[in-house]
Image (tube, rainbow, N blue to C red; front, side, top):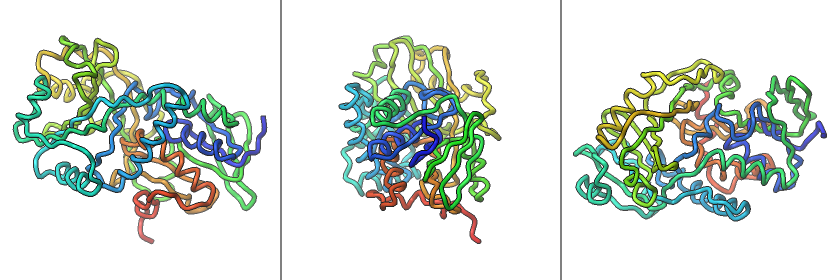
Length: 379
């Protein structure tokens, strides 16, 4: 195995695995360095299901990126001969005249996305087992659905290896340095050299960005699986992915994948951590108390007890936008993170964007929303 490459990608999760593939396909000699194994459950890209959608209340600028992401998902599915995206539809509900409502209306108007706007009564006619607050406005997104994050990571890794990429797993980066001659990456076992470096380390990028002056919050979130009494109401044929925002918090969930349970999680809340290594694996009452209340309020007696859970790390910038940019100290290093709890669906296109940045070409899609300078203190 060589120890000199065109590019080293550190962190082979959602973003890193995609970058590894796109760089290898573009002809770069590339090595991926992953501290665990690809598809692991220690970071932010795991848990069997993640929401995939185009409609974005946060900012309409995300939508063109998702158009391209959908195209790349289809290409990846065709290449691997697997289904990665399940287009079961999505309903999202929030309070009328809230930031969510205004943002969704702006997104739909800007990009003419197919959708339906429902009253609560109309939503009940479509999905009678959902109990929504009377002051909700509901949107149905026919393009929405879910994907398996572990399957996406492994598909990108397999394609990258087919294109000639190398992968070092169960090996953690200790340090990196850059000079006029290239970059050096040190692990506990070896020293690697490359012309350029891509850092897609998720929550482990916090020390790097903190040194630059970026303010971030790291949260431990918990995904919880609940037993369901009438599982036929939660099968993908009759139950969409859902995002429900109300005065009790922000929640999301999925149709059943195992024919026994449904998975749900809370976008709001979470426990702040100092380090990405501070996970403990236990399910605490505080992890699911608000979530269980939401599930009972929304589905009543259809929902039973929590039976399984997984921790998930989410690293937030102040405005919840991503950081995709060149390191301010050296053009040899690209930064991609944190993803503020909503990055998974963008992984296919962000790998392509990172490849373009490494190649020194201007990205074909607008990523000005994610430039580092917006997060740095004024000098």
